[in-house]
Image (cartoon, rainbow, N blue to C red; front, side, top):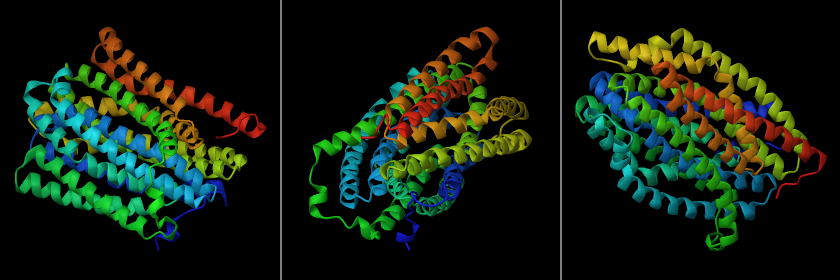
Length: 454
């Protein structure tokens, strides 16, 4: 059964392949968002607004670590998909083995750094004193789960590189259900507050990692031999050249988010709680974008390995139409129903509830109208990464950082608190433009034979 889920994307109609690969990822992302949504709902409704604000204060630091892990493993997956597309099974096994060793090493380093820097960074971000302790507790527990999160991302990336997007979906369904049950148990019954929400998330991620590992072990093409695990420094160097820029790109995007968080923290915990409520919906805004992106990365990588370059262009055209249409639908739904959805996260005095909801819905509206920009950003970025280019996407992340910080620091000085709402969308636009121009220039050279992948 596991072998049937592997998908060769070098044959068949590109639109159908991309959509068929993306749909399970979208569903998986929906269930993955239940992690943060349920955490926020349970904590916000049963613990209070200050606890919800504490989750928000921890969000970007937590996302930075997660972004480094996912970026690193996603970079490793580029070479896996290329070798699978080229039918180089021996090279595929060796690539997966070295990726596993590098992922384990990275997890150990990140674990030590994250735990030692959590409190100093929260203080540096001007975290309000009344939410500092809860934010630190949530972060430290999540950071203790770094090895678990790394394992899941390494296993799911391998499956996606082989064209299997269904197994990560099933893993996310299981994990989401476990997370919901444990959230209710730890927070509502045991009264563990934000600590209970963090413990539930880590344990649920562990279930998803084990499920993906068991699926990988059943694949006949991944029957490893002793020599597959022998240290291969040139291959490790090649993997790091792909993975490091992607991890660095995510890290610097998170740095921009931290600056925004610093500015938001200065507006008080009501504003922090409002932004937190909307940030919990950010994953719903983005869930189809990341799915189309992963699909395009795998499609591009496999077809690059098979040297079927025209199929990459056809696939991108189909993906653009599907992604923009999806973004328009999701944005419209958020504008129509966003206030009702946001209210599920918020409790407190009537005055606090109204203030928090006003902040949250205004921010959600600012992101919903230009949502297609975010979807184009993911498509172009992932297509370039599938070609083995992680450097230009890294530079787009740097541009994203500069624009997000500039808007966050300067615009509120001129027009007040509402200036902060423009930071995210402006950062999307700057990054998307550089990625789009690079993609089309790269494709022209590839189709003319003026550029050949390594």
